[in-house]
Length: 379
Image (cartoon, rainbow, N blue to C red):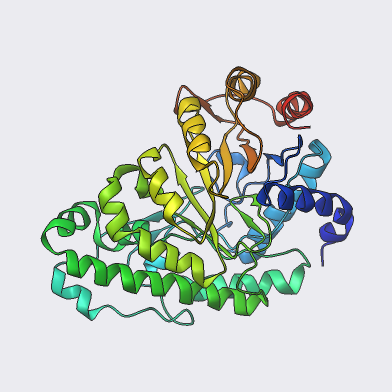
């Protein structure tokens, strides 16, 4: 049994209190900031750092995550709060509908899309059984292993919301064409997928002994009590405001409501939906990987003001991270109320001018620089 939870108990408690303040929109100069070096996924790491059996051995997955926690706490005193993640890629829920998931060597699992042929096939779909279907039983097995070997909190596996899940089981082309030609079947599909997400997350929470309104974190960022779920909504960036309002918003908010509210994540810019986001009473916050889009981040933060929805501003660590935060907080004076910030470190991937680019940098060097960045902008 590892002792990480006990070793960093006081530090984690301080981080969680700061997070609660952000979600309560307290007027404080301190902003929860995470320089995340303990990533559960493979993207952004050189192959030599990844175990051969990370996705085939639960013990290997556990050992790598634990070793990353130990390493992180020696690097920097930020607001990272460790939790274990049963990580099998972004296609676990879709796999329960028969969508194939591949396991390339030393890469994150891949997901095919499109297992529904015609509109009538939607009528044959059923909500999957977490004990039997796809990779769901593997996730439950992993959770049980984590429970037997650690006192750390455990998160439910990567979670796609109904819209992004619809893309996986139907495919982009069919989904968007059917919104025009077969809207009733799209609504039926979204209803089934919303019920699937609710059932699947509740099954994991029951096994973990978590209340429905509890979630320890969202992609490495701690969240406050009362946010019981997070899910990815990456495809919101390519859908119109009107179609999102009709086909996604009601189903997403239903999922959020089932867990007392929660967080939606997407990469890129989806500011056409700011009004939609404001309409969702159970949306407590947005986790946005902005890809270095300073103007987009500013617009999103400003657009959410007064809605009591937190912005979790995330990105892979920028090439010039000090200049990036300077532009946000000094030049443009972005509000720090209702804000959580994460810089996700990769030794080989950085963000530059809105794109991921390869970079060669040392973890400790960047961590040492980040200590000064934290003092300047977040403390």
